[in-house]
Length: 322
Image (cartoon, rainbow, N blue to C red; front, top):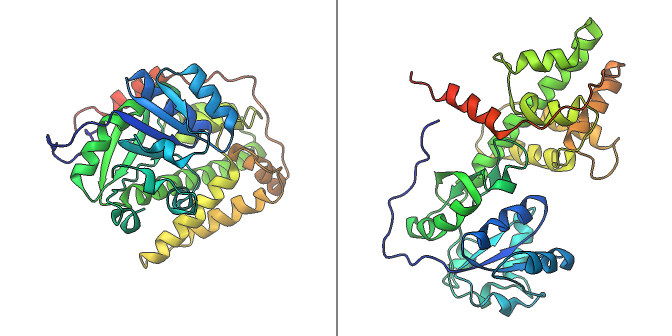
């Protein structure tokens, strides 16, 4: 894998000392926990006050905002880990927004307050890589100085940091990343049900794919560990995946590129979403494919989580010369 490209350092940018963090969900909580370990003072907020209280009691140098926007006044940098942009806008610029309390750097609206926005959506080489600070961040920043201010903090939470270009490019890359993953999920689900109808064993099929050219993230991790086992507990919801496909479809339309695949994947997965329980894991989409195929996939025994060393081994193969 080639090293991530980054703007040249600006030695005049003072390093942040106090960081605000809003959004302590599944990924947010584990990512935020790496900051006080690295010596930063941390101010946290979440709509679930039990999470902020737990963080303040378990992590060093961490305090809860208790819903007070002025609590973020000492922050040199603010991180939001929230589901969508309109929620970020409300948190920062709404009636009780905290942007006016910040002393440093959404886009033009924040710029009017002397603040700079960097988008840095997350992806992972293996599920729960956030727990060990080994995730991947896709960064968009129109200001190299803003990127350099944020980079030391981002490095505490991620192993790989890619500078994707101007503000918004990070989210564009995340949209395409999730579109590619969702497309592979649809192809894999098609293949698993048809394979069983023909007489192939799903577990053996997954094992063969993982050492062949059909390997992908679902075969390596989520569907191997949570799909064909029937566990359906990867930590990423089906509703979020369907939402991401809608964004991918709109992204293609915005760039005036004609393709039917995003809408097709969105329809297939969206149909399953209507049938499963609220908050169902994305790997439970297999239930919908089983219904369409008229089969029930043979469930394997417990499959151990893929260790990160397994991924390191695969990365070494990808990094070989030529």
